[in-house]
Image 1 (cartoon, helix red, strand yellow):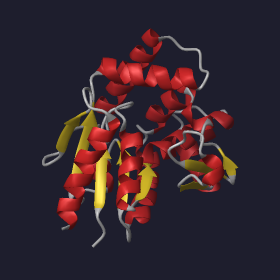
Image 2: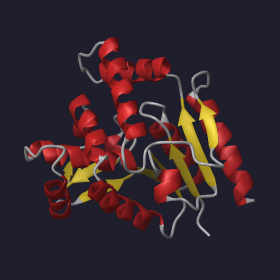
Image 3: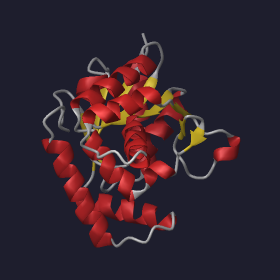
Length: 228
């Protein structure tokens, strides 16, 4: 029986970094579902399709090939996962603020979510995975043995995201990043379909005062207990 670790939580809570490291320690596949929504937003932007045009975006998803894999030896540039769009490496193209804002908008579209959730479930069907996103614990992998809600204070998350964007050469202020996080939290937690929330039985893990290594150690220890 595959071990599925499902990690939900708000933007910039450290889900990606933590999930990637946990997957490495356990020898599991790491799946960044948020990247799939970011690619969707990038596709919409490149085709000048409004983020609210559900039918057109689903049509575009069916026409484009999205692939995700672990970074290879030539891709050790800080990325957590390698994302290909029709063979083009868009791993960093999807990490801009414009795409990030668009991703939470397309993620509110029912048919887009249905299409991508199906893809995510196919990936996890027959293998151990560490999957992170906004609806993994209750929508994508509801039967997961280890459900985690990874969070941190808004200020902590804004500081992390601001530093991340600055290291990539993006000229943004802390105030703008903080405001954007608040807006994205509001959209994620109040969308009509599958709003972000803590499910019953989930382990709420606040990383505000923990290092990445401490968070990873806690999760790996719990996972090993489950595997026996």
